[in-house]
Length: 244
Image 1 (cartoon, helix red, strand yellow):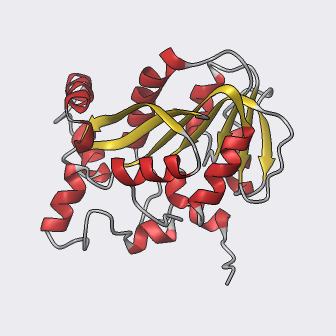
Image 2 (image 1 turned 90 degrees about the horizontal axis):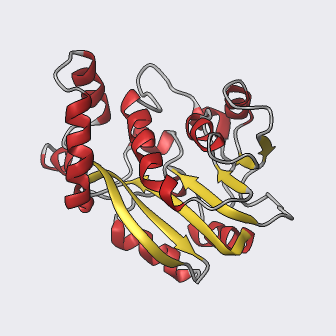
């Protein structure tokens, strides 16, 4: 049975459940620090942009950037923040028909939202140049903050999807093994893997600690560096792939 999804509703923050936090922007900035050394010259594709937070960063590196996003409202906001050269396509990944092939494809905090990851990943592989790179980043089911929530009885298991996450479009949670399994199943070769930001606090707690001055830029650099030592204990995990 096909379930109709309201992508505009999923993208919106509500008073009782925010969609994104300041800490998310911090993670994105560190993500670019990790990804940028691997970037290739040529056309790039971003799949899912929300309100353009990652698009702004990618546009600083890629002159030819195309974005596919299912939420028309999210695109409207993203357009206000990025150069006019960025091309937007309002479509689901399942519906999108792209003739071009891309040297770099980015799927940032989005794979956990799709209904059929295998189908989407296979399409992404078909859009990638033979020598191109696919960058995928997802929230980490095994983050210490999440494991603490399990021990507190707030969520059932590390890989559970909470009601709030479901309302914002999450359909699954990933750890290193399940992410790599989905990528390998469609023929991707994983060339690089890692984690971003050792994280013992929930995002809203990180924001409050930053606002109160309890933690600062030095602390953020510290948990970034610690994440390279303990990648499985980070806020987000990523893989950089080639077509295999």
